[in-house]
Length: 81
Image (cartoon, rainbow, N blue to C red; front, side, top):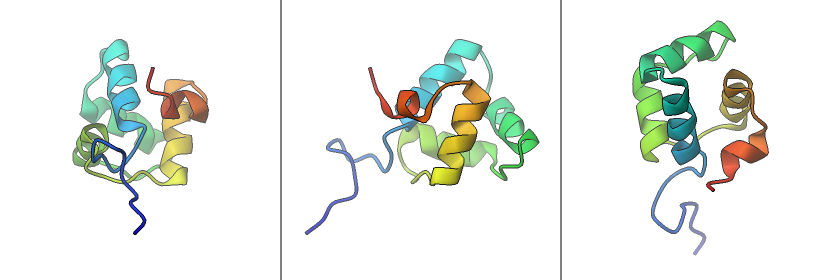
C-alpha cells in the first residue's frame, strides 16, 4: 500500500523549513499568513500552524507562494538541511 507521509509521519516535507525561515525573519504565523494573502493566497494563521507542524498537506500553488514570500526556490523549501 502506498504511503503519502514522510517517514516520521508528517503530511508535508516543507513545514520544517517554513517554520525555520519564518523564525529567521522574526515574524509570527499570522504575519506570514498576511504576507501570503498580499500575494493572493487565501490562507490563515491556523493553516500556517498546521503546515509547520506537518498536519496539513501543501499544494503546489501554496509551495510557489511560500517560495515567493521567503524569496527562496521551491527546492530550498523541500530541502530540510
